[in-house]
Every structure is written in C-alpha cells, then in structure tokens.
Length: 156
Image (tube, rainbow, N blue to C red):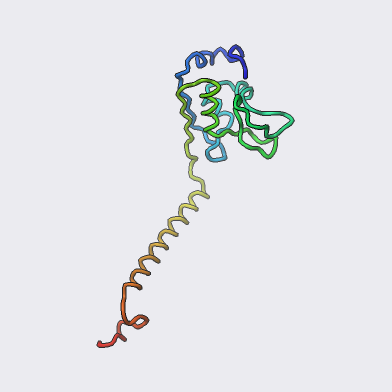
C-alpha cells in the first residue's frame, strides 16, 4: 500500500477527513461495472493513484485477491480495460483508505435499440399471456354442451 506521502497534495485533505463521502455515477459498457475514470472520480484520486492501488501484475492477467489492493474484475486479455465492481470499490474505500461513509452509485445506461426491442417483446408477451388467460377462463367457465355452438344447445 502506498504511504500517505505518495498521494497528491490535492488529495491529502481526503486522507485527513475520514468522513468524506464517495460517490460515482459513471457506467462502463459492462452494466454495473465501473471503469478507471469512474473509480478515479469516486475515490477522488488521481489516475496514477488508482493504478498504484489496483491489484495488477504484468506477468499475470488475473492475480489472486489481495485485501490491501483494489481488485479488478476478471479479464480474458491483458489489453482489456480494467473494470471494478462497485462493491469492491466501496470495500477498498472503507477498509484500506479508511473512508467512513461510502456511497457508490451506478446509474443505468440510456436505452439502446436492443433494450427498446426487448421491452417491446416483453410487453407483447404479457399481452398474449393476458389474452390466453382470459380465453382459458371463458372456456372453462362454460359448463355442459362443451364443443357445441350456442345454436346447438339442447332445449333451444
């Protein structure tokens, strides 16, 4: 872990104030994951500090969990961008940086064409289910003379 003297002077006030609140509203391409810039804003630290905190190894793509470091999500390729789970960022802020009150927010991404299409399909499926359920109740609600039309009922 880097010593407090290695932090930028601009961030020294956060080190001395454990009551500062951490928040982030940035979303990566992976829903719910924070990219490096979002973690940088959430922890109010420089890019270099985030890289120092991150549990990375040039010889190993996915090093084992280290409780004293900021552990990124699993990567398939060493060239992939680092992403962090919001709970991991909150854990690191509380346990290592000793920030008492931690709030990491992830806002939902804007609607994409795929998401709009999926919502339309869901709505159509619900409408079909509703029609099937009401159709089943009207068929099961008629007693006697099943399979006969209203004109063919006995006693008419």
